[in-house]
Length: 506
Ligand SMILES: O=P(O)(O)OC[C@H]1O[C@H](OP(=O)(O)OP(=O)(O)O)[C@H](O)[C@@H]1O
Ligand SMILES: NC(=O)CC[C@H](N)C(=O)O
Ligand SMILES: [Mg+2]
Image (tube, rainbow, N blue to C red):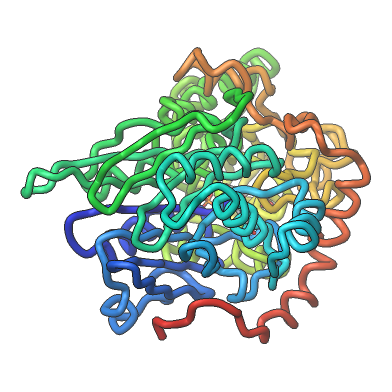
């Protein structure tokens, strides 16, 4: 999962893009990039690292112009080299840059057709570079000397015809404007906002999550619909079009469980309220299945589980205690590359306050259990802190199947729930009791915020892939490319590769 942002304003956009990306940092910690446009000149800075480390004052000064786009990356394809940081750029036609959140499931086939039929060069293993080239080819096929907004929309229709998988996209065409679009299933989120500038003109921001829009003092207008596209000219003229022939709302439910910030609103659902409802429903299940429980206190595993844990405590009529202190300088562990780094970071990130554990039966709450790295480590820490019994509740059902739509969970046998029932998972992570949310309750927790949402991408819980193109062979290839075992040596090597592209902001 990555974060995307785009702004058309009446003054310089560099600082607004930087601030917006910082608000989306939780969606990607590996690399960051900003591309701005002044007249028809593009300026690009992208590199591995957090937003605050990638952009120094000298870079910011050079990122000139009143429109621009940005990206924070968490890789799901290719490698974590800076050569695959985004936005990507191609010079023909017209000079186009693009940032992508999601994952293409037919990338091999697309790469072959882009190279053999469209005669375009692809220089990395990133699916996003392929996506950019598909768009560029489709635009050059329809546009004359000067592309108009209908040409851009028809190029986006071409992308919908050819690409499969998940893609929320932000793009910029030199001197002509910025565009964004969402895949026909609306798997990954993207929304836009606006505000009036003192000159009377309207400024626009497009972003993965509403938090970036609202905290930047724009007013959230709405999400893009599945398959829909938006184009904004440098003068602030805005156009929309449904560019897919078939579209259906199927947002990723894991955004609500873990990925998104609680203060975001996605597809008209408050992530915070959805997590509260997850807590209420899980408390009901605990009371149903274990009416005579002997839990003394509810303790969240910071950060994401806090909202659900508070509601569990309230509904069980128990105390809620912050028994783990989080080191604010350690970022999210789940989206770090490599199991070794994730494991080390859990210990550095969380530390127990012994008096909240000593002699007590504690119910720890997490939003989800994926590889079990966090829960195993935390349960051990709770016991070392003197807990009598350590119970664990997960606000999401067991994660048993790979994610192929933009979350780096490629290999089923890396999941602690793979081929294990709940009792076996309990034993594997060393808990005295383990309870998971039911999938129907999770869906209901989100749907209650917007009953018009009829279905969600729940593939990591069900193994049902809504794009209809995922078979065992696909999953085997994905696993061989991206499992922890296969990934590490490759990414070590790839760090030395020099990127081909615009490198004008150094
Ligand atoms: O079972 P695992 O493989 O350990 O993955 C699940 C854990 O990872 C995430 O936390 P993370 O530290 O990434 O972020 P957070 O601070 O937002 O909770 C998530 O909230 C769970 O705690
Ligand atoms: N997490 C994402 O959205 C990843 C985007 C893209 N597939 C990449 O690997 O860069
Ligand atoms: Mg967590």
